[in-house]
Length: 527
Image (cartoon, rainbow, N blue to C red):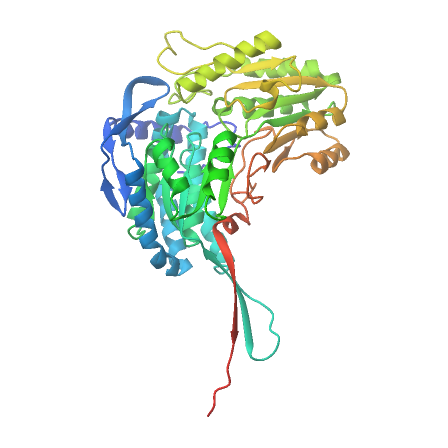
């Protein structure tokens, strides 16, 4: 079924009744598992900690979904030690065999798409299309990275020779134990991507998912074990960043780390602290304050749809969410009218329901942030639409808020400069495209950006001047969001990322390997 109807982040709607029927059946299967207690997975064994913690459905917090182990430093050290012990054998395993295991896991994910999507909706609140897309992207990331490893012959290249008796080779080799700290918003894809990249290149892995949404990450590690990953090659620890996360950052046996999350944590805690003894590879994917620029030569309906999809999809809880919109004055009123109309049409509710577009925020902290941001917007600027926390009988048990459009704030205001991670978009009228570009680039972030114009010269100008790692032009399905493995690479400039090599693209695996130059002088053999 998934092969016949492949859902990506650019799928505008899903009217496939058979697909939804399969999803509804999967929801009932998942509900039968509610209340389970799940272990840590270390050295291919179930391990229990001294405490557990509950994970709640953000759409209905009255009952826990499942209980997970609250790993401390000791359990995390055990996971690192298991990965360290497994590393020599895994690194020596032919890359074709490593890729075969990754491919098997991709097949498992695809086969369990509906169940995984149902789990994901329950644990973090994205709607059906977004959840199905997350699962599909996870499978595609695994397959793409296995493809890259094969396509590049294991990253072994013959170099030039000086004469007849020297052989020179460049070889890319793994680092060792790789830690992956994954976020709540793409709980499967942003675990599966770095985990598979590390594994196909020969590293072993300790995965620590977000405590808000660890369920699908647990299933990912379970699939790798079922697919034949040797003991210790991949390990799962669940628990607080203050214990499990800090141990991964400070443990001298962790050779490399991938972190996806906020700038404050990614830069100040991970990037700065991980290389405390000597330089070690750090891949941090951090925030965004992503602009869309609307030319007076834009197709207004397309632009409004693209901004709504990117600003309010998944409640703005994407680092790629459209957060700022700069509109040329001639079309500002027309654009704003369509933006408000389309925002008003968004259905807010339980994301398990087929018709729901916008589900809940992840947790109470996000609701508190939203309340604070709205207060500042009303005090210093204008709330054009939305701005309310929903507490009626249909929403009272979850973390529901309205999608919100704000305006009339100075460029240096915190709501214009800082990542918010809630469904709030700032809209401003500008006289010229040069003014729009100056404001678009004048923030610390450089993740994604969008542009709408029917003029090719304007498009070329935008592509030459925008400071962002991922850019889209005239994209109705998402002004600033929706990258897909093998189609659009994803990564940021400036404060949005550290490696300069985007995920889901041809250079992604280079982050997980280091180069060794090998020269062999062939000695003459005396007869």
